[in-house]
Length: 186
Image (cartoon, rainbow, N blue to C red; front, side, top):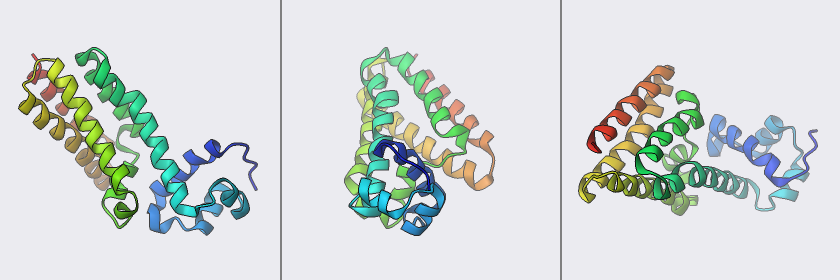
């Protein structure tokens, strides 16, 4: 069995397990098998079981997006923050090779367990991008529409890229979205 020293050490492993197997497919036996961590250790760190594990994963994802995407979009130079968003999103989703776990949870019965966190992830992303677009010169209504289109486009590009097993779909879509938003802020 793998030695684990901190609860935070386990969360990224859970994230990849949930990405590969889905919430329902990630039984405790399969989590133990994939992580090499015994059930006793898992319950020591996560007494709430699989639901608490998934909640910790979503909180970890949320913290990354807050730091790398939302906060810069809300506070930094608007055009630079939008440009950085495309780079960071491409890196985070490994050029379309990594699913959006929040998006995946939103599409199945898991949505009900984590509905507020899932909705909050998308709402905050859209609001932060809208804020940056407005600071870059877009009218509020246009900024809202473009922000929704941008987040939808990212999510759709992830799905299509994975379905076609072609990462170039994701990177090409990001470039198209970036060009569209840049043109709207000139």
